[in-house]
Length: 325
Image 1 (cartoon, rainbow, N blue to C red):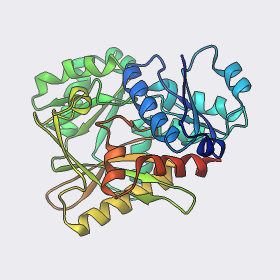
Image 2 (tube, rainbow, N blue to C red; image 1 turned 120 degrees about the horizontal axis):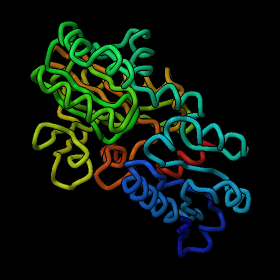
Image 3 (tube, one colour; image 1 turned 135 degrees about the horizontal axis):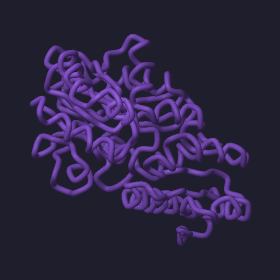
Image 4 (cartoon, one colour; image 1 turned 180 degrees about the vertical axis):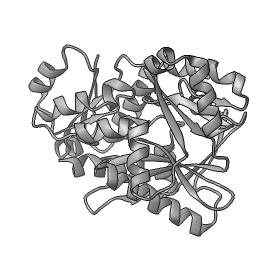
């Protein structure tokens, strides 16, 4: 797929950059990626940039060689964009790219790895166990899950160790529901992450770095109508209430921002990330996971955070792509 968006103002376009946005892919999040790419392209084209949307297919590398873009912005959600492989390959082209380099992306893509790095740095993250499909099968599902329940108790959150948009995520309040949750997680990944559920205020904190160091934008508070921030709750308008900025005390908001920036730095995420946190009743800020190529759709948290900061989407995206050069 190739699609081009251009401003109708020729004098501004002449001063703009030649930008390629990668969107689509073959993951379960393809439609979300396409929506993100389209909205980013429109915002950048409105400032005079020449923006081409490309899919990650067999034509990608020769098309990039032909277009010779100034910057590539991947908004490919799921493994094809976020596991680091494609980002490492893009690094061989010599074209500047928005987002983490391949090795950093690979670390962040693995939720258990990211949690371990964050915990070693002294920040709070829920206790958890990671189980591969093979371990689950070879050691006996009943024995494995009994051990997990004994160690972590309930309630639990079961999720694929890789992936986003809450696909394959289950809340387990009773031990007998854990096997079904494991099967759901294994639908999306060969490794499942089982962690203690922390209750509190769920926050998404966008971090951007436009060349002067990472800065956290106002946290967005997430309140799903049915209590679970599922795939449907993320992308269907009206399914979730968002508060931007979040309805937390200023001291807690500042602390959440500090945690998000520290994690962004720790994982080497460069120009843009979204750090998912939860603040419990005691005021502890817990790290859940990080998104290295966050969504940019009409219901996504990054655009909401930008607006809450009093900034213009196009101007912020312009700063991000210029910082990547």
